[in-house]
Length: 551
Image (cartoon, rainbow, N blue to C red; front, side, top):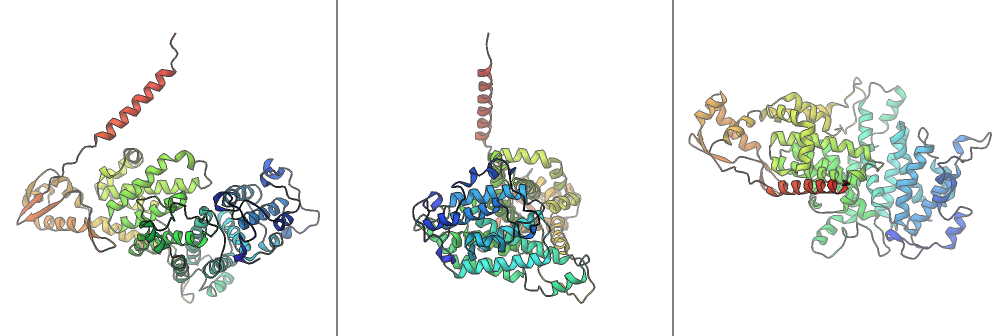
């Protein structure tokens, strides 16, 4: 069956935009398998009764019955466009099988499962994408496997871009495709950069792999998915109310496909991530312009996409000195994580979410130390931040470079050098070069702002002050103070992606001859938060009193 046959043999309107009925052909394919795979003993009883391979059977060609069941039913649900069941198998059964049966070994090769799915080309590409993701997560992929995974992604994206893929897949799976595609590109760049530990055979293979995980190829595929899906135009039309992409979470309930459109949407976030890994923050933010991060979107249906997008958006703004935008973005997603924490703890991606959560608190601490706009963050986020980094934030406000170095190194992305090395020169490891360069640029920016904290604290105390008096307070000469004031103006004003000038200043002033005139910086107190907090505390006290039994 070809890729454009998906969904043709089955009608009905099943859950998640999929068909609910099954044709006789699929019933014959399933054969003796039970109607509901969850009721099979190997799923219900924790795989205790799995039959071992026959004596003398080649383990390399052995496919357990439970894997046969899995691929047959996954194939069936994909053909039926039953998104709900696909999601259950992808998020539930695949994880369960991987944990119970394939913790130290890969899943059966695609050639072994192909006969059970009619040797379907597209399903085999999807299966291999999951196969390689499992290999990267739990095993140590070889160079050959890294190259094979690149070829598989190329083939899969070519089919999606140039074919008529009539499928509906869960948003989580489509995001994971883009996320894993970029992760494997990042992993290959790091792998190639560690040359000292490579043998002659690996070096010979690397010489032949110049086009494998090539940065231009990665960027071109992401851009091609965006262009072909016309997702930019769709998001623009949605503002006018002519299309409903976000309202349906990207799914097509008219029997169509969501694959290309949603992949295009997630590729926008993917471009932001790749550009940040390369240190090109302007291009990253420019790529994200089509998505309004302040409004609900398809990104918010996949928590890992939401967190990834805000993490890289906030980091790019930090590196471009757009601290206010970074603070607002981090506050938004950290508050969301606090409110939905109980759901994340049951997620298979909890460890990844927790790590990004901690990194974003570190980045928020840096932003607030360089640009103390504390009124922009919610009380719950502020409490968590103070609990984690109160002492370090004080040290950063005193220009302690070691703390900036520590938090940046902990919270920054794993930067990459995308270009292949010169194998004719002496072999050296250069996997840390990109990180060291970004750290050097960041610390250079911190050094340039080391006087700004003192200037800010003095300016908040006055409405007018002479430069001479300010110099005496700071114990430096007048030319240095004047230069520091101009530095403050420069560092607190940045150019937005559309060319407009943005101000991050928490103190506004102007200089007239030798006098500094400061604008009124009185902050309006937010009494609402105070009253809400005490009302909630009072309600807790009442509920506790109601539990008390009076004799």
